[in-house]
Every structure is written in structure tokens, then in C-alpha cells.
Length: 174
Image 1 (cartoon, rainbow, N blue to C red):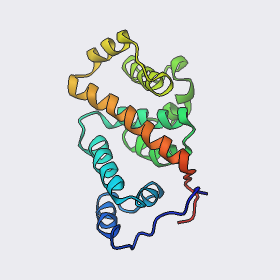
Image 2: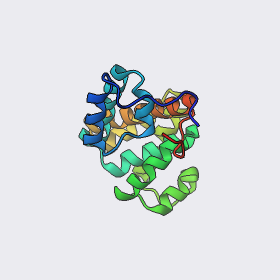
Image 3: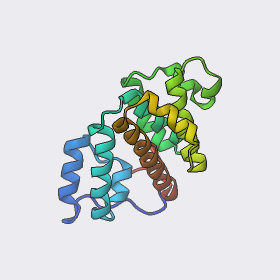
């Protein structure tokens, strides 16, 4: 159960953003129900994550591997619950999801995917990234994709930290 009640979605201040979220996402997930306590923050968040998830050129399977791995590392089950189905639709296999916790020893990931997961682990656990890893990723991705990759890891660390600070879970009642 969330640590504070979710925002009222029918308030005059929240209503325009609620309509936009429903139009873009289909519904107002718990994450946005909490963010809507501050409509300016919710709007900025929506703009940023829409860019990361829907406007970036990074392949969807890579993006979702990153998101699910960040959720796993941070113990953010809500984030994983939301993104595993998306990852599967984007072409990540169930076997890859199942072996994500031990990706280093798995044969189900390409070498490029393993470098992406190494980046995800380093950014999430240590913040700093080894120069040689970034150099090898620059051989796998163009500059735009590399920026989008790092921004995705950073963005979803932000998401999981917000979710966990407020104790947001998939089975919360509205």
C-alpha cells in the first residue's frame, strides 16, 4: 500500500493532464496517480518518459531489457510488473527475462546485450561507468542511441526510486 493516498484525478488542476495521460497511455497508472499530487512534476515526468519510451530510436527490446534490469536491481516490482509484458511484445524472450538475474553466465544474450546490461548494472549500482565499457558500447550504438541508452538507464532508476520511496505496488487499490 502506498505511503500516502493517491491524488484525486478529478481535481481542476489535474484534469487536463489526466486526460492527456489517458489519451497517450490508455489509463492513469499508480505511478501517475501519485505524481499528480504535483501536476508540474507529473507533466515533466510524462514528457521525459514519453521521449524515452516512444520517441527515441533505441530498439524497443534493448530499452525494455534495460528497464526490467533496473527494476530487478532496485527491487522495484511495480516497475517490473509494468514492463515485462512490454519487453515480451518488443521481442525479449521469456527465457531472457528468466535469466536476467544471472545475465553474465547466460547464453541467451548477445555480446552487445551483455554490454548493455553491464552498463545498466554499473550505472545502477555504482553510478560511474568504466571508460572501456563506454568505448565498446560506442561500437554497438551510434551517438544518438548511446545517449538514449544512458538516458533510459537514468530515467528508470529515477522511476524505481520514486516508486519505492512511496511504496507503490501493482495491487494497490486506487
